[in-house]
Length: 249
Image (tube, rainbow, N blue to C red; front, side):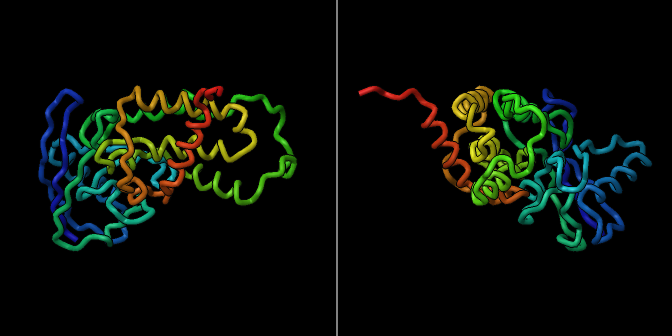
């Protein structure tokens, strides 16, 4: 396969940036999208051109680092798939592909296709944890948990914090990410002790970071590589209302 790539190049957060065009030669269908970029970078280095900078780590769909917008869709648009899992067989010989970084004020560009997603880290530091000292690891069946609750908690905990939900949302909302982190702990007994403090602090930090509001377009669910559903946002909203001061009649 031979492809034409239109790639966003930007020196730093202050640079205006621009699209540059490169050719990808002899790409095999079984390559991942990141492996294709590796091939392009090898050719650029051989020509004395600075390679394209992009984020990656595990390349197994686990870490969430491969934050790319491909042809206008975060992670390329294949359902339940991260960029590193996206195979070149999803494209055709001669295709033109546009590659950009995630676009959000809270995700400033570091260089080229790399963005700074430390805003997510600060949201987690605000309350996305259980701080109660439970001692040694309890026996697997020591705390009875209904299977439906355990399943819902595990589904929400699948979030890898990639930021695709933010990049897809017209408001750059982080509600799906924050809701997944709030919800997976709220379903478990270990997380209920701090549930009120957790949701208020995490939502406050989310607003502080400059993320937008949710307006129910469901774009976040459509691009989430772990298929997290927007119902977690409804759950987080209920948690937030529960944490508000109660009016005494």
